[in-house]
Length: 113
Length: 117
Image (cartoon, rainbow over all chains, first blue to last red; front, side, top):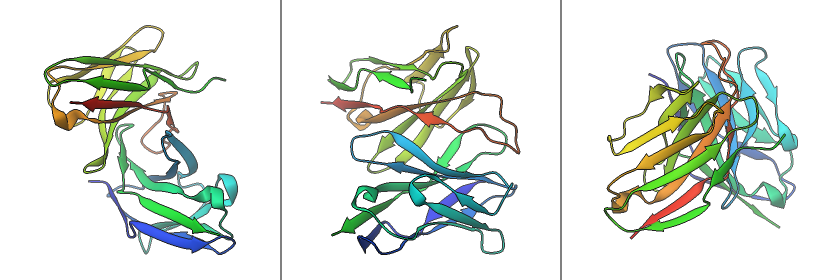
């Protein structure tokens, strides 16, 4: 069965410092992995998507994630946080035989000035 | 292209009532999925419709149902509402032609926030 574990429920950073949001996955197949962001009272927006083409995936707003099969990880990073990055981030794995998305529990990112 | 739209955005109902939520996918998208988001359970898959047929279903009771129309618009219905049904209901659309190896991106609407009193 597929699952994702987001290792931190909250992450706080200062504006201009790097961001690291951690995600480990479990999958018996080669997984499709996603990161989505949810701003308060908004829907989910796709940040980036991994589908085995390249292990380093670049997304929107300066975010990127690296797929590491040996560590079963798909951590999200950004070199320099911006105040507008404050939101909830979800690591997601797609069920192999269906289009069902399986969400992690989310990481709330706070950015301090 | 217009994004996924959901109506209404907010709803207040009382226990025992029923409710219908609507979702209009991105033009050309044939797959619509529904998710429930609550503080306690997080984001959970309800069901997916493709070409007017339910293609996948999550672990929710039969009070939760849905349908899809020929124009790909979808509705979900919750009957005999319970307090625990209070949640943000999110709809997502995709082209629907993905394979096991190449998953299509699902695009989410803003959600309908349902409060059951």
